[in-house]
Length: 618
Image (cartoon, rainbow, N blue to C red; front, side):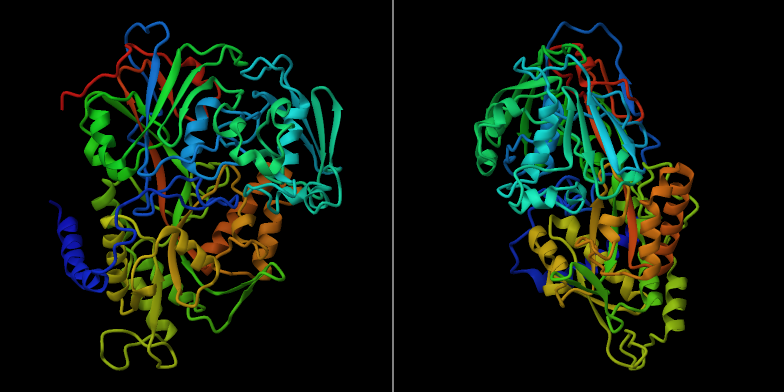
């Protein structure tokens, strides 16, 4: 056992005795139940995170992106897939209505997306539809391929591309995707408010072409931003169902049709989904007969992988499972960088729901930038990565994940653990221990107690919270848990979003989705700007990223770099960990690929070497 591990365990054992004394009556949120963290598209679920961690590793360099096992493939066969979850999946199989990452993982096998993307997650012309945008006219053109059919044999029509907009913008819409981006479409607000029968900015040019007029256009449209929608809905089925009844309809819950490689055959609510080959798939019928997906408790998923019950998992496997599965000889572990990061946030103001604007509070407890910087340098993230994640996570250096290679600034150093630097910054800022109790007072000589909000989960969540608090104590800062304990996931975000006065700092994570533009998370008009940090300089930097000039890729890349540097210097939030998704592929699977840059791989190409998955001998 390394000296670092012994040191960390010693700190945790001592501190957990104190934490346990405070929390011994708390039965909430200690089971390690998997829940979702928010995405920048106003979704607190699609990143599919376990709050007990942060999850998924951060360094994928030691793992391949694809596998091609030797041997002759069988004809057909059923791919057996494990969905790791401790709660029943919701079963909302519509991209305009679903609310959690489990449903998203399930829908991967029956995908209604119309756009393909490249390695930088920019829309290409290789999908069902192509996209052209003209910043001079603020108009975009979507054109669909000829001959594409739904799984029930009905031809894909341009009305099917229009229909998602009419659902999301409808006054009776029950989902969460009517947001600022969507309102960028001309006429969307009037339609949503019941003042118009349709969205005036949507214009059918012909049977395969849609023109969309926007209030403004930016390069974000090629990342699925600005309000453009990336999937189709079967209007020939849904048009007869009132929008307010779609969420509970059979067309969404029991027998949805699909454009994807497979189609739904049998759904056992919350438990399993049986897919069969979609003979009408636009890329050609899949080689597999079908896919059988079952929900598997997180506590038993590693065993299920070992004993060969499943060929693979739906979505990625939590990094904390890596020590359990790394020696199995019946799998290949693939990995890819996540479109997400964990971060430490500082409460610096309030969000005015009436004006829809964030306002800075100069008197906020965390308003001193040197205090914020010191708290970043005090965190020994590297040790946590080693002990809990086998170094499969890395210290985050930016608020742009490295997966966005064009926009990620790899010259940034971030807040690498430096206790001496943290102490020096606090001394410079006038935070000193004037009463000899071991904790620093603020520059006015007043007691300083910083309230820290973290999310509840399994034992790891408590251990990590205890370690962070000890890190800060090591530089003389007294940090205590808000409410005296870790907070259940939904309550946590309710409190953070409401600017609860019991929260000075908090730890959370963002999934960026395919659009790296930070305006939706850090703009003064963004409700998700939870730190409430806003300055005229920040406004200009965000504006430049999504400006008409930014259609020049070099200009936009430089604008991203300027913004990243500004956020590092001002530290309203400090990124802590980059993540990488890991995937287990059984050796009974002939081929699989998770490389985003590989535009050729498709689920229809997957084959099996045998009907049943291979068992591990270890």
